[in-house]
Image 1 (cartoon, rainbow, N blue to C red):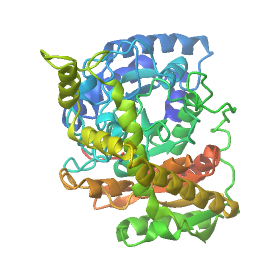
Image 2 (image 1 turned 30 degrees about the vertical axis):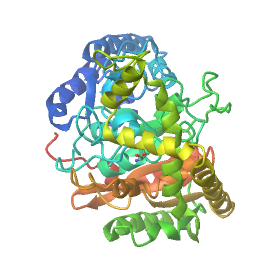
Image 3 (image 1 turned 60 degrees about the vertical axis):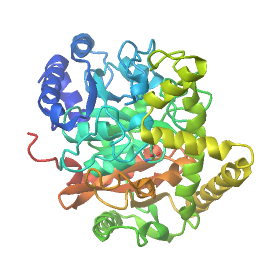
Image 4 (image 1 turned 180 degrees about the vertical axis):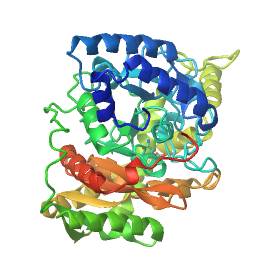
Length: 484
Ligand code: GLN
Protein backbone atom coordinates (compact mmCIF):
# COMPACT_ATOMS: atom_id res chain seq x y z
CA UNK A 1 0.00 0.00 0.00
CA UNK A 2 2.82 2.41 0.79
CA UNK A 3 4.00 2.42 -2.83
CA UNK A 4 0.66 3.62 -4.13
CA UNK A 5 -0.02 7.23 -5.02
CA UNK A 6 -2.81 9.14 -3.31
CA UNK A 7 -4.91 8.82 -6.45
CA UNK A 8 -4.47 5.02 -6.33
CA UNK A 9 -5.14 4.87 -2.59
CA UNK A 10 -8.37 6.82 -3.09
CA UNK A 11 -9.51 4.24 -5.64
CA UNK A 12 -8.53 1.37 -3.32
CA UNK A 13 -10.59 2.89 -0.50
CA UNK A 14 -13.62 3.17 -2.75
CA UNK A 15 -13.19 -0.36 -4.12
CA UNK A 16 -12.94 -1.55 -0.48
CA UNK A 17 -9.59 -3.20 -1.22
CA UNK A 18 -8.61 -1.78 2.18
CA UNK A 19 -10.17 0.54 4.73
CA UNK A 20 -8.79 3.82 6.03
CA UNK A 21 -8.18 2.06 9.35
CA UNK A 22 -6.04 -0.60 7.62
CA UNK A 23 -4.18 2.06 5.68
CA UNK A 24 -3.59 4.09 8.83
CA UNK A 25 -2.39 1.05 10.77
CA UNK A 26 -0.06 0.15 7.92
CA UNK A 27 1.60 3.58 7.88
CA UNK A 28 1.74 3.76 11.69
CA UNK A 29 3.55 0.41 11.66
CA UNK A 30 6.07 1.76 9.14
CA UNK A 31 6.59 4.83 11.31
CA UNK A 32 7.18 2.54 14.29
CA UNK A 33 9.74 0.55 12.30
CA UNK A 34 11.70 3.20 10.47
CA UNK A 35 11.26 6.46 12.35
CA UNK A 36 13.52 5.61 15.30
CA UNK A 37 16.43 5.68 12.84
CA UNK A 38 15.26 8.40 10.42
CA UNK A 39 13.89 10.81 13.08
CA UNK A 40 11.50 12.31 10.52
CA UNK A 41 8.67 12.71 13.04
CA UNK A 42 8.68 14.65 16.29
CA UNK A 43 5.26 13.46 17.42
CA UNK A 44 3.18 10.43 16.42
CA UNK A 45 -0.57 10.76 16.99
CA UNK A 46 -1.50 7.09 16.60
CA UNK A 47 -4.59 7.03 18.78
CA UNK A 48 -6.34 10.05 17.30
CA UNK A 49 -5.33 8.83 13.82
CA UNK A 50 -7.32 5.64 14.32
CA UNK A 51 -10.34 7.63 15.52
CA UNK A 52 -10.14 9.83 12.38
CA UNK A 53 -9.67 6.75 10.20
CA UNK A 54 -12.85 5.16 11.56
CA UNK A 55 -14.73 8.41 10.93
CA UNK A 56 -13.35 8.47 7.38
CA UNK A 57 -14.45 4.87 6.81
CA UNK A 58 -17.99 5.87 7.81
CA UNK A 59 -17.95 8.80 5.40
CA UNK A 60 -16.65 6.58 2.61
CA UNK A 61 -19.43 4.12 3.28
CA UNK A 62 -21.99 6.89 2.92
CA UNK A 63 -20.56 7.58 -0.51
CA UNK A 64 -20.22 11.36 -0.17
CA UNK A 65 -16.55 11.51 0.69
CA UNK A 66 -13.92 13.93 -0.65
CA UNK A 67 -11.19 12.43 -2.89
CA UNK A 68 -8.71 12.71 -0.03
CA UNK A 69 -10.97 11.16 2.60
CA UNK A 70 -9.26 8.44 4.60
CA UNK A 71 -5.75 9.15 3.25
CA UNK A 72 -3.04 9.46 5.93
CA UNK A 73 -1.02 12.65 6.20
CA UNK A 74 1.70 14.30 8.29
CA UNK A 75 1.89 17.96 9.23
CA UNK A 76 5.15 19.87 9.53
CA UNK A 77 5.54 20.84 13.18
CA UNK A 78 5.19 24.51 12.23
CA UNK A 79 1.40 24.18 11.69
CA UNK A 80 -0.65 24.59 14.85
CA UNK A 81 -2.66 21.50 15.72
CA UNK A 82 -5.30 21.74 18.42
CA UNK A 83 -4.39 19.56 21.39
CA UNK A 84 -1.16 18.29 19.80
CA UNK A 85 2.21 19.82 20.61
CA UNK A 86 3.49 22.21 17.95
CA UNK A 87 7.16 22.80 18.67
CA UNK A 88 8.61 24.31 15.49
CA UNK A 89 11.51 21.98 16.46
CA UNK A 90 12.53 24.46 19.16
CA UNK A 91 13.11 24.09 22.88
CA UNK A 92 11.20 27.37 23.05
CA UNK A 93 7.95 25.61 22.07
CA UNK A 94 8.72 22.16 23.46
CA UNK A 95 5.73 22.51 25.81
CA UNK A 96 3.36 24.39 23.48
CA UNK A 97 -0.02 22.78 22.84
CA UNK A 98 -2.07 25.06 20.60
CA UNK A 99 -5.74 25.65 21.42
CA UNK A 100 -6.58 25.86 17.68
CA UNK A 101 -5.83 24.36 14.27
CA UNK A 102 -4.04 26.22 11.47
CA UNK A 103 -6.29 26.88 8.46
CA UNK A 104 -4.28 24.37 6.41
CA UNK A 105 -4.78 21.72 9.09
CA UNK A 106 -8.48 22.53 9.27
CA UNK A 107 -8.91 22.45 5.47
CA UNK A 108 -7.22 19.07 5.15
CA UNK A 109 -9.09 17.64 8.15
CA UNK A 110 -12.34 18.70 6.53
CA UNK A 111 -11.62 16.44 3.55
CA UNK A 112 -11.39 13.51 5.96
CA UNK A 113 -7.61 13.09 5.75
CA UNK A 114 -6.05 11.32 8.73
CA UNK A 115 -3.20 13.02 10.61
CA UNK A 116 -0.51 10.51 11.64
CA UNK A 117 1.74 13.00 13.41
CA UNK A 118 4.03 16.02 13.14
CA UNK A 119 7.27 16.15 11.17
CA UNK A 120 10.72 17.24 12.24
CA UNK A 121 12.24 20.39 10.73
CA UNK A 122 14.98 22.95 11.20
CA UNK A 123 14.30 25.10 14.26
CA UNK A 124 11.76 27.80 13.31
CA UNK A 125 12.32 26.69 9.67
CA UNK A 126 15.80 28.22 9.61
CA UNK A 127 18.17 25.93 7.79
CA UNK A 128 18.80 23.74 4.77
CA UNK A 129 19.87 20.48 6.37
CA UNK A 130 17.56 19.78 9.31
CA UNK A 131 20.57 19.86 11.59
CA UNK A 132 19.22 22.78 13.65
CA UNK A 133 16.26 20.87 15.15
CA UNK A 134 16.06 20.70 18.95
CA UNK A 135 14.96 17.08 18.42
CA UNK A 136 18.05 16.08 16.47
CA UNK A 137 18.73 15.86 12.75
CA UNK A 138 16.58 13.94 10.26
CA UNK A 139 18.43 11.35 8.16
CA UNK A 140 18.09 11.13 4.41
CA UNK A 141 16.43 7.75 3.71
CA UNK A 142 18.56 7.34 0.57
CA UNK A 143 21.81 7.55 2.53
CA UNK A 144 21.53 7.93 6.28
CA UNK A 145 24.97 9.54 6.51
CA UNK A 146 23.57 12.48 4.54
CA UNK A 147 21.16 15.33 5.23
CA UNK A 148 17.58 15.30 3.90
CA UNK A 149 17.67 19.05 3.21
CA UNK A 150 15.66 21.58 5.15
CA UNK A 151 13.78 23.06 6.64
CA UNK A 152 10.96 20.63 5.73
CA UNK A 153 13.39 17.69 5.86
CA UNK A 154 11.13 15.61 8.09
CA UNK A 155 8.21 15.93 5.66
CA UNK A 156 10.37 15.08 2.63
CA UNK A 157 12.18 12.18 4.33
CA UNK A 158 8.89 10.75 5.62
CA UNK A 159 7.30 10.73 2.17
CA UNK A 160 10.50 9.35 0.58
CA UNK A 161 10.62 6.53 3.15
CA UNK A 162 6.92 5.85 2.58
CA UNK A 163 6.00 6.62 6.19
CA UNK A 164 3.08 8.66 4.84
CA UNK A 165 1.68 9.27 1.36
CA UNK A 166 1.65 13.04 1.96
CA UNK A 167 2.98 15.78 4.21
CA UNK A 168 2.52 19.49 4.58
CA UNK A 169 5.57 21.76 4.44
CA UNK A 170 6.51 25.44 4.29
CA UNK A 171 8.88 27.38 2.09
CA UNK A 172 10.43 30.74 2.98
CA UNK A 173 13.50 30.47 0.78
CA UNK A 174 13.37 26.91 -0.55
CA UNK A 175 12.25 24.73 2.34
CA UNK A 176 9.69 22.73 0.37
CA UNK A 177 11.70 22.41 -2.84
CA UNK A 178 15.23 21.78 -1.55
CA UNK A 179 14.35 18.86 0.77
CA UNK A 180 11.97 17.48 -1.89
CA UNK A 181 14.92 17.51 -4.32
CA UNK A 182 17.36 15.89 -1.89
CA UNK A 183 14.87 13.16 -0.91
CA UNK A 184 13.50 12.40 -4.40
CA UNK A 185 9.90 13.53 -3.87
CA UNK A 186 7.65 16.21 -5.41
CA UNK A 187 6.77 19.46 -3.66
CA UNK A 188 5.16 22.75 -4.61
CA UNK A 189 5.43 26.18 -3.04
CA UNK A 190 2.38 28.09 -4.28
CA UNK A 191 2.11 31.76 -5.16
CA UNK A 192 2.36 33.97 -2.07
CA UNK A 193 -1.18 34.36 -0.73
CA UNK A 194 -2.57 31.19 -2.30
CA UNK A 195 -2.44 29.15 0.92
CA UNK A 196 -3.43 30.67 4.26
CA UNK A 197 -0.63 31.36 6.74
CA UNK A 198 -3.03 31.50 9.68
CA UNK A 199 -1.79 29.17 12.41
CA UNK A 200 1.49 28.58 10.59
CA UNK A 201 4.21 29.80 12.95
CA UNK A 202 5.77 32.85 11.30
CA UNK A 203 9.42 32.99 10.23
CA UNK A 204 9.51 35.75 7.57
CA UNK A 205 5.92 36.76 6.90
CA UNK A 206 6.41 38.30 3.44
CA UNK A 207 8.10 35.11 2.19
CA UNK A 208 6.50 32.18 4.06
CA UNK A 209 4.13 29.97 2.13
CA UNK A 210 2.73 26.51 2.89
CA UNK A 211 2.41 23.71 0.36
CA UNK A 212 2.32 19.94 -0.05
CA UNK A 213 5.02 17.28 -0.44
CA UNK A 214 4.04 13.95 -2.00
CA UNK A 215 5.40 11.32 -4.37
CA UNK A 216 3.98 12.77 -7.58
CA UNK A 217 2.81 16.00 -9.15
CA UNK A 218 -0.65 14.47 -9.43
CA UNK A 219 -0.76 13.94 -5.65
CA UNK A 220 0.47 17.50 -5.10
CA UNK A 221 -2.39 18.73 -7.31
CA UNK A 222 -4.97 16.92 -5.16
CA UNK A 223 -3.45 18.19 -1.92
CA UNK A 224 -2.96 21.78 -3.06
CA UNK A 225 -6.59 21.95 -4.17
CA UNK A 226 -7.64 21.18 -0.60
CA UNK A 227 -5.07 23.43 1.11
CA UNK A 228 -5.55 26.58 -0.97
CA UNK A 229 -8.22 29.22 -0.75
CA UNK A 230 -9.11 32.58 0.71
CA UNK A 231 -8.96 32.98 4.47
CA UNK A 232 -10.17 36.19 6.08
CA UNK A 233 -7.92 35.45 9.08
CA UNK A 234 -4.79 35.96 6.95
CA UNK A 235 -4.65 39.52 5.62
CA UNK A 236 -2.29 38.49 2.80
CA UNK A 237 -4.51 35.63 1.64
CA UNK A 238 -5.73 36.23 -1.91
CA UNK A 239 -9.44 36.09 -2.69
CA UNK A 240 -9.40 34.22 -5.94
CA UNK A 241 -11.11 30.94 -6.87
CA UNK A 242 -9.05 27.76 -6.53
CA UNK A 243 -8.85 25.98 -9.89
CA UNK A 244 -9.32 22.24 -10.17
CA UNK A 245 -5.60 21.43 -10.40
CA UNK A 246 -6.35 17.82 -11.16
CA UNK A 247 -8.50 18.56 -14.19
CA UNK A 248 -5.70 20.05 -16.30
CA UNK A 249 -2.96 17.51 -15.53
CA UNK A 250 -3.33 15.77 -18.88
CA UNK A 251 -3.42 18.90 -21.05
CA UNK A 252 -0.95 18.82 -23.91
CA UNK A 253 2.28 20.76 -23.45
CA UNK A 254 2.75 21.17 -27.19
CA UNK A 255 4.13 24.65 -27.88
CA UNK A 256 4.85 25.39 -24.20
CA UNK A 257 7.70 27.87 -23.87
CA UNK A 258 10.23 26.94 -21.19
CA UNK A 259 12.72 29.63 -20.17
CA UNK A 260 16.16 28.35 -19.16
CA UNK A 261 17.97 31.03 -17.14
CA UNK A 262 21.65 31.21 -18.07
CA UNK A 263 22.49 32.25 -14.51
CA UNK A 264 21.18 28.95 -13.12
CA UNK A 265 23.80 26.93 -15.00
CA UNK A 266 26.91 28.76 -13.87
CA UNK A 267 30.06 27.54 -12.16
CA UNK A 268 28.53 26.73 -8.72
CA UNK A 269 26.36 24.00 -10.21
CA UNK A 270 27.52 20.36 -9.88
CA UNK A 271 28.00 19.00 -13.42
CA UNK A 272 26.10 15.81 -12.65
CA UNK A 273 23.08 17.77 -11.41
CA UNK A 274 23.26 19.92 -14.56
CA UNK A 275 23.27 16.79 -16.71
CA UNK A 276 20.17 15.34 -14.97
CA UNK A 277 18.33 18.64 -15.43
CA UNK A 278 19.37 18.88 -19.09
CA UNK A 279 18.12 15.34 -19.72
CA UNK A 280 14.67 16.27 -18.40
CA UNK A 281 14.63 19.40 -20.53
CA UNK A 282 15.46 17.31 -23.59
CA UNK A 283 12.51 15.03 -22.83
CA UNK A 284 10.21 18.03 -22.47
CA UNK A 285 11.38 19.25 -25.87
CA UNK A 286 10.53 15.84 -27.30
CA UNK A 287 7.07 16.23 -25.77
CA UNK A 288 6.60 19.40 -27.80
CA UNK A 289 7.91 22.17 -25.56
CA UNK A 290 10.22 24.88 -26.84
CA UNK A 291 13.35 25.70 -24.82
CA UNK A 292 14.17 29.40 -24.69
CA UNK A 293 17.42 30.85 -23.40
CA UNK A 294 16.64 33.63 -20.92
CA UNK A 295 18.50 35.80 -18.45
CA UNK A 296 17.61 36.74 -14.88
CA UNK A 297 20.37 39.32 -14.52
CA UNK A 298 19.76 40.14 -10.86
CA UNK A 299 19.90 36.52 -9.65
CA UNK A 300 23.15 37.15 -7.79
CA UNK A 301 21.27 39.57 -5.51
CA UNK A 302 18.79 37.00 -4.20
CA UNK A 303 20.84 35.37 -1.46
CA UNK A 304 22.18 38.67 -0.05
CA UNK A 305 18.74 40.33 -0.19
CA UNK A 306 17.09 37.31 1.43
CA UNK A 307 19.60 37.21 4.27
CA UNK A 308 18.67 40.76 5.20
CA UNK A 309 14.89 40.59 4.68
CA UNK A 310 14.26 37.14 6.21
CA UNK A 311 16.25 37.76 9.42
CA UNK A 312 14.73 41.27 9.73
CA UNK A 313 11.22 39.84 9.64
CA UNK A 314 12.24 36.91 11.85
CA UNK A 315 13.64 39.24 14.50
CA UNK A 316 10.26 40.96 14.69
CA UNK A 317 8.20 37.74 14.56
CA UNK A 318 10.26 35.95 17.19
CA UNK A 319 10.04 38.85 19.64
CA UNK A 320 6.80 37.31 20.93
CA UNK A 321 8.70 34.42 22.52
CA UNK A 322 9.60 36.18 25.74
CA UNK A 323 9.03 33.55 28.42
CA UNK A 324 5.92 35.40 29.65
CA UNK A 325 2.94 34.33 27.60
CA UNK A 326 3.73 30.82 26.42
CA UNK A 327 6.67 28.62 25.55
CA UNK A 328 9.89 28.09 27.46
CA UNK A 329 10.54 30.04 30.67
CA UNK A 330 13.88 29.95 32.49
CA UNK A 331 14.13 28.71 36.08
CA UNK A 332 14.11 31.22 38.96
CA UNK A 333 14.43 34.53 37.12
CA UNK A 334 15.89 37.33 39.26
CA UNK A 335 13.75 40.02 37.65
CA UNK A 336 11.88 40.74 34.42
CA UNK A 337 15.02 41.52 32.44
CA UNK A 338 16.60 38.25 33.56
CA UNK A 339 13.40 36.39 32.63
CA UNK A 340 13.43 37.76 29.06
CA UNK A 341 17.14 37.34 28.66
CA UNK A 342 17.59 33.83 29.95
CA UNK A 343 14.33 32.46 28.52
CA UNK A 344 15.42 33.56 25.07
CA UNK A 345 19.08 32.59 25.45
CA UNK A 346 18.19 29.14 26.75
CA UNK A 347 15.11 28.55 24.57
CA UNK A 348 16.51 29.40 21.13
CA UNK A 349 19.25 27.49 19.31
CA UNK A 350 22.37 28.97 17.70
CA UNK A 351 21.04 29.53 14.17
CA UNK A 352 17.86 31.20 15.42
CA UNK A 353 19.91 33.54 17.61
CA UNK A 354 22.20 34.34 14.69
CA UNK A 355 19.19 35.34 12.57
CA UNK A 356 17.66 37.45 15.37
CA UNK A 357 20.96 39.29 15.80
CA UNK A 358 21.40 39.90 12.07
CA UNK A 359 17.80 41.03 11.72
CA UNK A 360 17.88 43.36 14.68
CA UNK A 361 21.12 44.88 13.42
CA UNK A 362 19.76 45.44 9.89
CA UNK A 363 16.65 47.17 11.23
CA UNK A 364 18.41 49.38 13.74
CA UNK A 365 18.57 53.16 13.29
CA UNK A 366 21.48 54.08 11.05
CA UNK A 367 21.63 50.69 9.32
CA UNK A 368 18.05 50.45 8.09
CA UNK A 369 18.75 52.40 4.89
CA UNK A 370 22.05 50.68 4.21
CA UNK A 371 20.70 47.15 4.57
CA UNK A 372 16.93 46.77 4.77
CA UNK A 373 15.97 49.44 2.23
CA UNK A 374 18.72 48.26 -0.16
CA UNK A 375 17.52 44.68 0.15
CA UNK A 376 13.97 45.76 -0.69
CA UNK A 377 15.29 47.55 -3.77
CA UNK A 378 17.12 44.39 -4.84
CA UNK A 379 13.89 42.48 -4.28
CA UNK A 380 12.08 44.79 -6.71
CA UNK A 381 14.77 44.14 -9.35
CA UNK A 382 14.49 40.38 -8.89
CA UNK A 383 10.71 40.56 -9.29
CA UNK A 384 11.15 42.65 -12.43
CA UNK A 385 13.53 40.04 -13.94
CA UNK A 386 10.77 37.46 -13.68
CA UNK A 387 8.04 39.77 -15.01
CA UNK A 388 10.18 40.35 -18.09
CA UNK A 389 10.92 36.64 -18.45
CA UNK A 390 7.23 35.75 -18.27
CA UNK A 391 6.53 38.12 -21.16
CA UNK A 392 8.48 35.66 -23.30
CA UNK A 393 7.99 32.24 -21.70
CA UNK A 394 5.31 30.23 -19.87
CA UNK A 395 7.44 28.56 -17.26
CA UNK A 396 11.06 28.82 -16.10
CA UNK A 397 13.13 25.71 -15.35
CA UNK A 398 16.48 24.80 -13.90
CA UNK A 399 18.04 22.88 -11.03
CA UNK A 400 16.46 23.03 -7.57
CA UNK A 401 19.80 22.89 -5.73
CA UNK A 402 23.43 23.22 -6.79
CA UNK A 403 24.50 19.83 -5.38
CA UNK A 404 23.04 16.50 -4.25
CA UNK A 405 22.61 15.73 -0.53
CA UNK A 406 25.74 16.36 1.55
CA UNK A 407 27.07 14.66 4.68
CA UNK A 408 26.09 15.71 8.19
CA UNK A 409 28.38 18.43 9.48
CA UNK A 410 29.74 19.24 5.98
CA UNK A 411 28.49 22.83 6.14
CA UNK A 412 28.06 23.06 9.90
CA UNK A 413 30.69 25.70 10.65
CA UNK A 414 30.09 27.72 7.53
CA UNK A 415 26.69 29.43 7.56
CA UNK A 416 27.35 31.08 4.20
CA UNK A 417 28.00 27.72 2.47
CA UNK A 418 24.69 26.55 3.95
CA UNK A 419 22.90 29.71 2.77
CA UNK A 420 24.08 29.06 -0.81
CA UNK A 421 22.06 25.82 -0.86
CA UNK A 422 19.06 27.99 -1.71
CA UNK A 423 20.71 29.97 -4.47
CA UNK A 424 18.16 28.84 -7.09
CA UNK A 425 15.07 28.77 -4.87
CA UNK A 426 15.14 32.04 -2.94
CA UNK A 427 14.32 34.38 -5.85
CA UNK A 428 10.89 32.77 -6.19
CA UNK A 429 10.01 33.68 -2.60
CA UNK A 430 11.32 37.22 -3.01
CA UNK A 431 9.14 37.62 -6.11
CA UNK A 432 6.14 35.79 -4.56
CA UNK A 433 6.03 33.34 -7.48
CA UNK A 434 5.11 29.65 -7.32
CA UNK A 435 7.96 27.11 -7.48
CA UNK A 436 8.07 23.35 -7.60
CA UNK A 437 10.64 20.57 -7.41
CA UNK A 438 10.31 17.10 -8.88
CA UNK A 439 12.93 14.35 -8.91
CA UNK A 440 14.97 14.17 -12.13
CA UNK A 441 17.73 11.65 -11.50
CA UNK A 442 20.19 10.10 -9.09
CA UNK A 443 23.72 11.33 -8.45
CA UNK A 444 25.93 9.08 -6.29
CA UNK A 445 22.81 7.12 -5.35
CA UNK A 446 20.88 10.10 -3.99
CA UNK A 447 18.19 12.10 -5.80
CA UNK A 448 18.43 15.52 -7.42
CA UNK A 449 15.61 17.85 -8.37
CA UNK A 450 14.31 19.77 -11.36
CA UNK A 451 12.81 23.14 -10.46
CA UNK A 452 9.82 24.68 -12.21
CA UNK A 453 8.94 28.32 -11.62
CA UNK A 454 5.57 29.56 -12.81
CA UNK A 455 3.92 32.91 -13.28
CA UNK A 456 1.66 34.22 -10.50
CA UNK A 457 -1.17 31.74 -9.82
CA UNK A 458 0.01 29.44 -12.63
CA UNK A 459 0.21 26.39 -10.34
CA UNK A 460 -2.14 24.42 -12.60
CA UNK A 461 0.23 24.83 -15.53
CA UNK A 462 3.30 23.83 -13.50
CA UNK A 463 1.54 20.74 -12.17
CA UNK A 464 0.47 19.88 -15.71
CA UNK A 465 4.05 20.09 -17.04
CA UNK A 466 5.43 18.12 -14.09
CA UNK A 467 2.75 15.45 -14.48
CA UNK A 468 3.45 15.11 -18.21
CA UNK A 469 7.14 14.62 -17.49
CA UNK A 470 6.36 12.06 -14.78
CA UNK A 471 4.29 10.08 -17.29
CA UNK A 472 7.43 9.32 -19.29
CA UNK A 473 10.20 9.30 -16.65
CA UNK A 474 10.86 6.87 -13.78
CA UNK A 475 12.36 9.17 -11.12
CA UNK A 476 9.31 9.80 -8.94
CA UNK A 477 8.70 6.05 -8.61
CA UNK A 478 12.18 5.16 -7.33
CA UNK A 479 12.52 4.63 -3.64
CA UNK A 480 15.37 4.16 -1.19
CA UNK A 481 16.52 0.59 -0.70
CA UNK A 482 16.20 -1.16 2.63
CA UNK A 483 12.84 0.37 3.52
CA UNK A 484 10.58 -2.25 2.02
N1 GLN B 1 17.29 27.61 3.97
C1 GLN B 1 16.65 28.88 4.04
C2 GLN B 1 16.86 29.50 5.39
O1 GLN B 1 17.56 28.93 6.14
C3 GLN B 1 15.18 28.75 3.72
C4 GLN B 1 14.41 28.20 4.85
C5 GLN B 1 12.96 28.11 4.53
O2 GLN B 1 12.53 28.14 3.37
N2 GLN B 1 12.17 28.00 5.57
O3 GLN B 1 16.37 30.52 5.70
